Image (cartoon, rainbow, N blue to C red; front, side, top):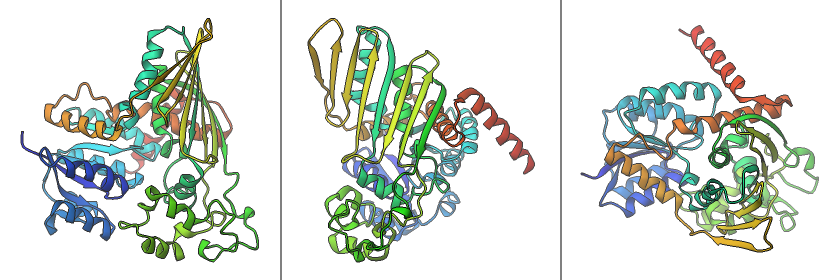
Length: 422
């Protein structure tokens, strides 16, 4: 087969460092033939990487989709609010599609997404859910399915964002207003909810959720602070001091500039949003959330999301009728304790590149056209996305939400509104 021809929509960190780098390193099997990106520096970088002609470099999706089909597939890694429209137009044009999570950022788009999946069963339409390719989570699932610890009763799932990452994304960054993006349960934890569904082997039946913005707000600003970190008098004492975060966290600095040198970063932090005091950003996203979920097979789970940890991490505890399992995603370590034994079994799972496994699977499906056994189809992610929206509604309404009823009402409301515009 000839090289798989790819168009990248969104040449930010994921588009540039995850997908473009992989394709560049595997040019014997795949190639980027066009890019769509609204920031000139990012467009130029992809153009240079793949020696693209000027007529294959697009500033916006409208101009791109006006052109005839020019590739086999599109990878959508632009901002969340463009995912639905990009996927819809790409499928309509005949492209296979891989879309970053969350797949959509509004409930009405989620309702319509199911119809789009059904209409495009002949296409490879995949969601970037990398944990589905994780040996760590596969090992946990294997332990559950073997039944040697009895029945699974409860899961405690801790998703710790880390103070640096939370300040970057949800205080200073593009996800700081959930009205402009989506609930943090979706933007941060659609992957976690997806894994809970995988481990329980069931769909969530009811959910309750409690969360709020505790700390990153104007009332915590003091008179000796400045609205811009570069002019602040407490820079040495503040853990959220922008210069300190971006000078030591090279991954986050990539979001600020296509060429994140010290001079470039400092120039951006002088006046830009990423150099702003965390207590003056007018953000509204909850910095801590606890969700309680009951699944249809009576397994219960708690999902704890917090900004206030030193590092980003995920910890999982599985409780069975005859033992318990604890897993640390960061070091790929799983501990098994049986009630009838004093011994603790430690399993070290191989560290694998889950992004690379995901991309390879997408390309393999394009080649084989085997869309009946997609490990990460968009259709299979809809339940976890519904759970995220239901969890947000539960938090806002301070209620326990039945997911089937919630989704049914969402469908009815969406269809009623759409009829008004016909």
